[in-house]
Image (cartoon, rainbow, N blue to C red; front, top):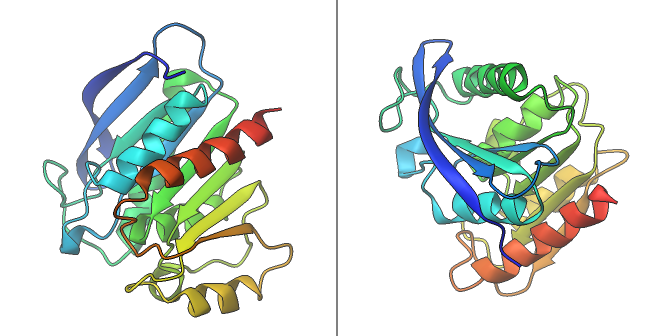
Length: 212
């Protein structure tokens, strides 16, 4: 059953100015925790309103979490300018700090799509999180970490992804030990056109399993 939630537009203090955000909060029950969602590449139209980012948010809401989406620096009403993944990581770390201070939640998941997935992976290698969802992560260009994330971790990607090569993702995963779970969606491309419901259901199942 879909869960009722309330959406609140807000701004969070980031490293170079205000970051525009939307917090979706559970209405009828106490949230299990919080999921922070990272959007795709801002120079190619990526914002927190992206359909895949929105799908991630809905999956977590249905799983009993609050969900926070935000725009990286220089995107829409967020201040600053694009910083090639470096400043965007600082943005995410600032949002995590704000969220923890606000909710005092012990359970925190990170999730992202494409560019945003890579930023979330990098953040998860720096701070402890309870789970990580990476949709079509742009690992080749933007992932850079020494200590890999140590949490339940699912990567989802289509085998017809025209922007993030699936073989590159698999080769990268083979360098990790232990590696994340990988779910390949047959005949799905980068933006999962016509497959968003399936994507949402797979994310929901993974998060629900880890909630047990």
